[in-house]
Length: 98
Image (tube, rainbow, N blue to C red; front, side, top):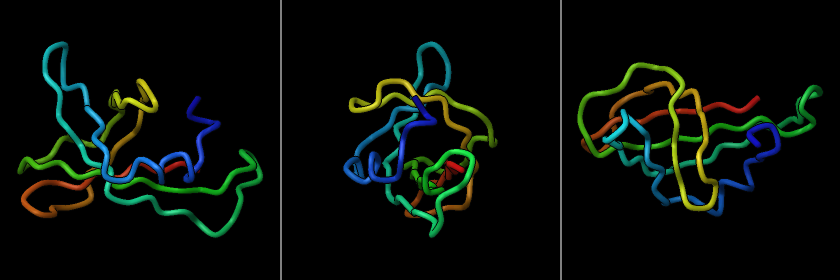
């Protein structure tokens, strides 16, 4: 499913909450705050590269890694997230699609 998603799939979900599974019982809500499309289509995937920026409302950060995020429109997604810096009392995370 991830290989088929494009930036336009996520643009309609700006502002929505994605729940990151911390463990079997705990989740961290992340708000999708930005969808950034690159200028060119990549030859391998035949889609435009893009990135997603999520924001947590909690201070501190999780280490970069692959996390399961759940959201109503997409169901479960396994995304590699990188903390990119604090914003509005929380932390921003980025996922890049090549």
